[in-house]
Amino acid sequence: MIDLYTWGTPNGRKVSIMLEECALKYRVHSIDIGKGDQFKPEFVALCPNSKIPAILDSEGPDGKPMSLFESGAILVYLAGKTGKFLPRSVRDKYDTLQWLMFQMGGVGPMFGQAHHFMRAKKDAIPYGTERYGNESKRLYGVMDGHLAGRPYLAAREYTIADIATYPWVARHEWHRVDLAEFPNVKRWFDAIARRPAVARGMAVPFLN
Image 1 (tube, rainbow, N blue to C red):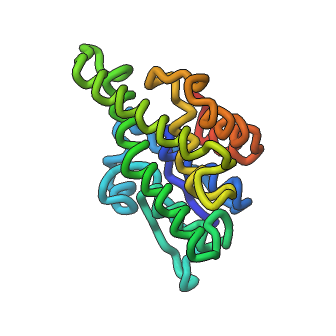
Image 2 (image 1 turned 60 degrees about the horizontal axis):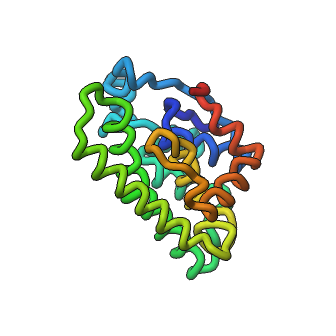
């Protein structure tokens, strides 16, 4: 059994989608980041950085419980545990990992900052809105060009790179992006949205 500590954010939903795709048994523990649950000692013991998500796997690699934080690391761990969504071919594996890092180092931070300046902050700062809005659109352009003529971000198959990126693109309206401007991204997005496991994972721990 895997215990998932999460909230309704793109980073949290990466892991719930992966758990659903892998058909792993898991229990959900809601960490309300709006109320500061991420700073409670019991959660900090799992994640010293006080960021969701985190997991506790009762059957780790050596048969002993293992806790893990950082959504990208969790995806790689679950792929290793199940043999799913991270290709075995060395070339395709590294292709997948580079697009996972693209999400972790670019899409997540930049889209997240766009969310902050465009939605969360009451007193809008034009510089922040313009800077992160433009960078978000640039990243959409990178993905759109890359997805021309290919169904998925990496290895021409559905991988953890797609699982990591989809929940962030699902909030395209939050960073004022019209997917019609990026037709290859829209095609990719619509195809992934039709996966039943993705729909289930996006509903964890609640819909918003």
